Image (cartoon, rainbow, N blue to C red; front, side, top):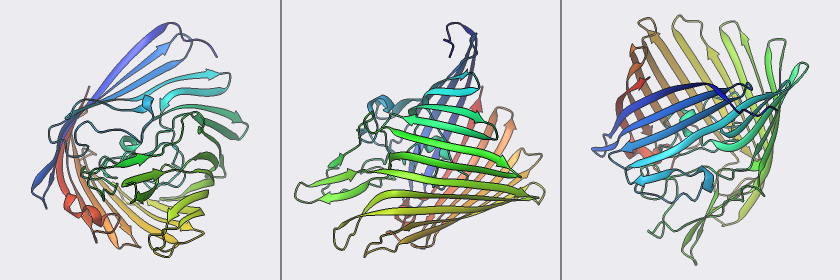
Length: 405
């Protein structure tokens, strides 16, 4: 692979987003923030390309991730910088693209996306997520880019993708006291111990084989990785909350094909090991976990797009306090109007086990090619013990705009 020694072209673009969100049930502002996302792309005379994407945020309310929090879920080289309580800075992505013969190589901090599901994670587990705003933002802003190596090698009618991730950052929940914190705080002092794996010793490795056959977009996937979502345990004697992790082999695949105006999407995965604690007995249970998504997309109506998904995860060894399977249904409806200047969208997610839900409504109006106005609502329904119902009081109305240059 050639060495990029001389830059021949540097391009810059930026996106500035202003947004305010009002939690109407509590009568308080949840956020009033401005976010700047600059991007630089440098092309070298060797054919290589370097991409740098940053993110700077100022939030006047500081309720989503209060103060200058510790970052126990992140490896050191992936941490966010907090110059003040209201400002955070992050190097989002930093990667070099190049070709070595027919093989494509990408090295650096990046997002690696697997799978066909929209917002539901079966195979798309290489990059952990940030739960700063739970699951409300678009997934590309919730993924935490990791220091990784990726190569794609053409093999006649197949493409082999090899990935290596020596970055032990895991899914990040905000700490107790934040609006969408998922960490219990029974001792009132936020005494959390995260037993995160070592970055090099516990590197993740993966292989994806993809092909297009008779109209079917197919893939076979394998990943040896750390399960990013922790087993949370309460250590009453030590007065600590413990977050533990385990390694697992993930095998699965995807298949999708359009049938006229209807597109079928499917995705399946099997984890060799995940751990759960029975809240009734306290027993730690190791079990295989299978999950799948079936999705249907319909675009037969002019200016309309409708998508529905069914998601199920199944524990092969259950617990006394919970069922072996969990199911969710999602429905997305999008309408383009005024020559695509106005986009109206509604997304609903319903948890069949907890019987709670999240509804997201959004309207976007493009004033010009670089100015977009936005208004929306994020509405939680259900019991306080449910996945979505626990955030009932955080239901919010939002408004803002984006400016690109």
